[in-house]
Each structure stands twice: as structure tokens, then as C-alpha cells.
Amino acid sequence: MAKVTKVSVTSPTSVAKLLLYIRTIMASVSDPANASLFPALTNPPPTEPLPNVPTYTQMKTAVDALETAEIKKRRTRTPADKTMRDAMKNVLVKPVEGYIPLWAAYVQSMSVTDLSIMQLSGFNLSDQPESIDELSQPENLRVTVYRKGGFRLAVNPVEDAAGIQWTLKQVDATTKQPLPNVEPITKSSTACTVDIDDLVSGGWYLITCYAFASGDVISTESNPIIVVCV
Image (cartoon, rainbow, N blue to C red; front, side):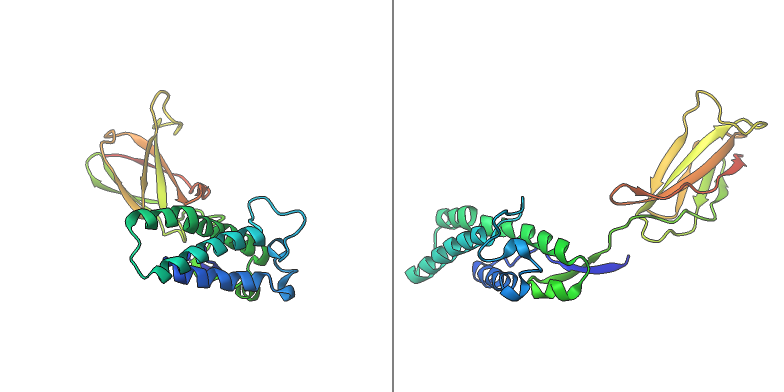
């Protein structure tokens, strides 16, 4: 699957590294030279903040509180007990960690695919799978009778597909129309082949398939084939 460079939503796990990372980002996005690139993150904040995008002031308040607690902990030179560590994590670390993905999403929306703008934000970047908008139609659908009452279906690989959905409809031997009151047989597979068993010997089947991927993306249906089961 093709990959695209995006703003990373992850953050360092240690408090010291987290503080260094977010301070770098804050300095970058609030730089006057970048005001037109990230207008929602300027310092001072805009008069009309965007919903779901914490302002620079909100981030600074959370970061300052975390940094103060971290400095105090280090000055005591005694290991913090579990209760204190949990309190620090829940009250001080989580707000900062929660703001970072919101800022990352905003920076991504402002830069779209412009790598130079992403780099100016101070965020780490990562190569992520490119979102899939459409899939090609499965081609060369074929059938092998591999056992009595059983078909082995196959189709050419479909790029970026997570799997194949197969459908078999029993049809009238003469008209080739689906038989009434007979439910279609459906089966999905992650491979481009699948075995279908327990078919009606002598029955005629209309077979189609389509490819699917994450995000409810599906292809157009393959060209159908009609075969008889032995």
C-alpha cells in the first residue's frame, strides 16, 4: 500500500522528553513568521478560537503546570510513590497528551500534503498508509471444481484491497435467473482464492465478487460467471 508523510499524533512517554517536544512545537507554531500558516495557534490566541483546537494559552497553562510539578519532583531527589505518580499522570500529563493530537490534526489540516509546512510546525512526521478512496474491479474471476459439491474460486489480486467478498446465487438451469426462496451464499476471504463447499450437485450458480478495504470502501462487482456444480 502506498504511504504518505503526515503529522505524527504520538508523543514521548517520559515527562522530560514530552516537555521538550511540546515546547519545541509551541515555539514553532507561535513564531510570528508562521502566523499565517497556523492562525489558531498564535500567541496571543485569536479572538475567535476554533472548536476542538486548544489555544496557545490553554496549552501553555497545561505545560507550565506539568513542568512545575516535574521540577519539584526532581528537586526532592526522592522517588515519587505510586499514588503521587498516578496523580501527576492523570492530572498533569494527560491534558498535555490530549492536546497534542488536536494540535496535530489542525496542523495536518492546514498543511494538507505540503511537507515544508509540516516541518515548520515542529511536530514529528511519520509515513502512514495512504487513505483508500476506491478499489479496482476484480478481474478474471474463475472457478475450479476441486471436489464433489465444492468450488474453488479465484480472482486476480486487487491493489490495496483487504479482502474479497464472494457471492453465489443458485439459478434456474434454463433461464439462468435466481431461484426463488433460495438464499445466496456469501463468504469473505483475505486471500484472492476461497473454497465453497456443500453446493447442490447438478445445480447452476451465478458467481460474482467484489473487493473491500477499511473505511467501508468497496469495488464495483466483478463480471459474473455461471457454472454447474458436479
